[in-house]
Length: 169
Image 1 (cartoon, rainbow, N blue to C red):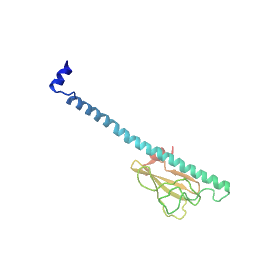
Image 2: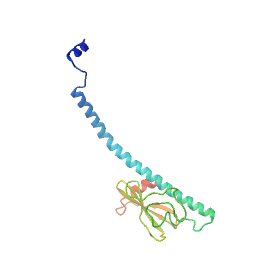
Image 3: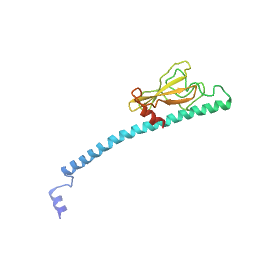
Image 4: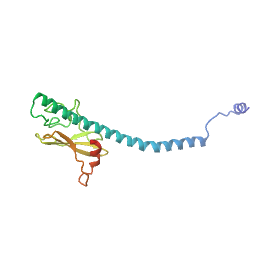
């Protein structure tokens, strides 16, 4: 009966203004809750990416050391991790071979690496920065010991000690 009246009067079924406002408010609340969580998950993803890259670099150093040890090539520990005067092929094409099969292009965005000591003539400590959460963590490769690590000491002189621990644990 109501359908017959609506057809005769020319009414079309539609949403009321109150229903539309209610749906818009619900979508706004959902967006307000979801957006901060998505931003946090991006930072977590960059952290996990950094952790896997640090592990890959350390594994590459150990693999080069083992390869050189088996070949009897001195020194056993790689002196450099990449070409001394490069900022593009980081951890690749070093004098000891490739630490990583595909190196990184140096940049300063979150999740990127940058070589600090570019052009240094065979230093003992070669430094790299990993950028995360708008700051950077300084890693040092010691060519005497073959270690690739950052400073975990908490203090005013090292504000990124927690990030270093997160990347290396």
